[in-house]
Length: 64
Image (cartoon, rainbow, N blue to C red; front, side, top):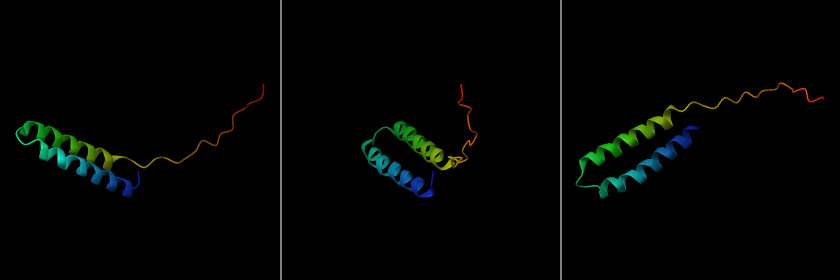
């Protein structure tokens, strides 16, 4: 994944999570679970490795 896409996805996660934090006022346990999910999601986005672009150039024998 390109760095630009990672930044955009991180911003989208924060934009979605902030209103949910505002709605959940009385239950701190749910906020902790949501916060752990946000941390896990952002970590998973930033740990993704670049794709391997090596192609298999081996020609298959298609004769019968």
